[in-house]
Length: 109
Image 1 (cartoon, rainbow, N blue to C red):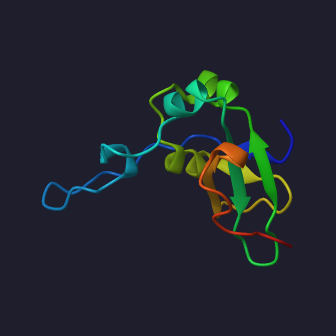
Image 2 (cartoon, helix red, strand yellow; image 1 turned 135 degrees about the vertical axis):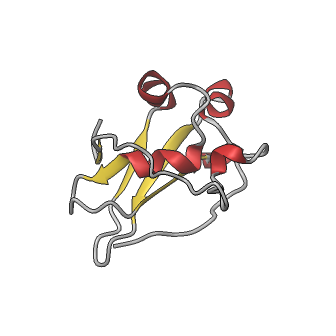
């Protein structure tokens, strides 16, 4: 894999009983790795650290081996660190390509 490095997993913070933390994993319509593997779509990772903008495409099958098919695509980014700058401001989304909704945003350095 070139571009982004898996970060060392850290335990989730303790949630308060009064205010449960919402997560993309709790949303029923969130895109999961299992949804992408059916259509052979990879996952794009983008570094949003100031002055970086590094980009990588990671194979969905590899991500499933690491994190499981039920992993929500938005949560994958929290498990990566940018290999260019070391930053943790990484975002993830499906790499839809021609079969998807088209260009969602353009990231340039």
